[in-house]
Amino acid sequence: MLNARIRSRIFQVAAGIAAVSPLLVLLFVAGVLVMDAWPAFKFQGFSFFTGITWNMGNMYASNPIVHNGVEGAPGATFGILPFIVGTIGSSLIAMMIAVPISLLSAFALVYKIPPRYARWISSAVELLAGIPSVVFGLWGMVVLAPIVANQIGPWLTHFGKVLPFLAGPVGSGFGLLTSGIVLAVMVIPIITATSRDLIAQVPKLPIEGAQALGMTTFESIRHITFPMVRRGVIGAIILGWGRALGETMAVLMVSGNATNYLPTNLYSPISTMASTVAALLDGALTDFSKLSIHALALIAVTLLVITMITNLLARLLVQLGRRDVGTEA
Amino acid sequence: MDTRADSGVSEVSIQTMPSYEMHSYRRKVKSIAVWSISFAALAFVMFIILDILLSVISKGVPGLSLKLFATQTSGIAGGLQNAILGTLMLIVISSLISAPLGVLAGIYISLFAPKRFGAVIRFISEVLAGIPSIVIGYFGYMVMVLQWGMGFSALAGGISLSIIILPYIVRTTDASFRQIPKSYLEGAIALGMTPFMATRTVLLKLATPGVLTGILLAVSIALGETAPLIYTAGWSNFDPNLQLIKNPVAYLTYVVWTYLNEPYNAAHQLAYTAALLLVAIVLVLHLLVRLLQRGSIKHA
Image 1: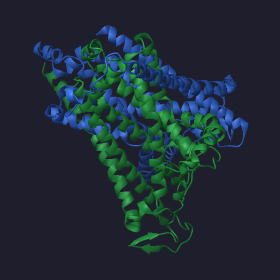
Image 2 (image 1 turned 180 degrees about the vertical axis):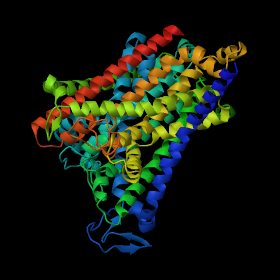
Image 3 (image 1 turned 120 degrees about the vertical axis):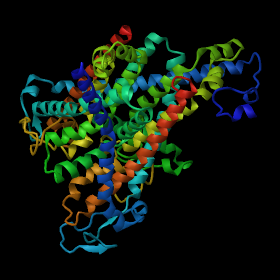
């Protein structure tokens, strides 16, 4: 018996130690990144976030320039505004496409599709969520980019007189719009599944009552279901947005990889923060002053902070949303 | 007005409701219109899913052959044996690290942890799950590959992947143990079992489908990751040699990403086929998860 007690004690202590591991990992990752990023911030200051020129300088030289006490390669200057614009722009386009489609799909899945079929459709949507991002990238390159370049783009330019941002030239199909559409496809399953789960928890009785009183199905959902799930749905949307902000590979494959260049229209090549880190890390290593690596760390930290904030906000809202429909205390 | 101030979600106050005409044609038309758009949206989503699957299948199938599994990549052509084995090795390493750690952590926060502590760890796991994978890739590169001297290696790649999948395993384990009524654990302890025995004999059996689901999902995430591996696992034209450090390994997602940018048809074909293999494995894992979930519903 004593033996069993000791074994149980050991198990509980081991489990307790394991439970701290996510915290330790997070602190370690964040700590390393912040320390790595610090010299770049000291070198560049806040112009890091507002500059549009990213130049790692003459990396093979041996005469470092010193700025604010930090050594950098001659000519080095780090401005990430184009990457920030690319990240926010592509993710916003993604949300403009994904949000209405996902929400309408979620409502239809819960209220209009017979459960037998709804289960299959939901399963397919969840499968979409599990597809590797390089496969989305492949689809974007091979299928979507030509469609954007030859059909969607030219059609959208007709609206260029009203909205100059939509005017041509359309270019190769690799750029802001294609990135946005690929990201939309990637976040649709997240928003759809999360909001479908919330909507399914809304009690049926008030809805049936409203319909009995003469409301149409749309009105009953508009006035009863929607107010109950609103907070949770906003949470689901922000969750999807966080995913779009941090996506690397799919964007890297279809964005056209522009540097030092702010998008001039919907079809311009872009780079996002995540894709830039992936694309430039290799080259940054050859910088004798190591400053380029620190600058990439600073991009990673910026991205980390942004996605942390969006994630926290989203989780909080989804949690509150679950409370709104009464599934979780 | 007061009734509305209270978060505005639990009740619909009468004042906020528009007044509707009793027998309005327009209302019915509007309802039908909105639902039609919803169906169209859903149909669109299904169309995209089908289009992605069909384009991957139609482009990937011509490259399938037995040779593909038996030869290694060479330059821009050859087979995928090295990538398949490398992916397998990375998944095994990351699961060996994350599964025990994550399952133990999930058990602890669902059964034994003080409420506050459990909430904090749950929260931290969500934050960890939200970190973009390239950030983990950067971390792995700077710390493991360079500082710790692992070089491009299976271990550096495996640990990076394990950081990414850990929170998913914690979350699903936690959720499946929390679904079991508290009285089971209390009853078992009242009968004289130690918490460990109670967990192992009574609870684990009930939670197993959920825990396995979580691990399978984690495997499917690990399988599809690229960004954390580019700078940790590297790439090799040869089969993995079971050396954990200083030996780069190949993996399937790398083929999809890089070979598409090569100007050769043979390279493109290899990329399509690698994508097909990835999708096929994800599909199988997805079906397994479905089966497990159905099993656990029957069981409960």
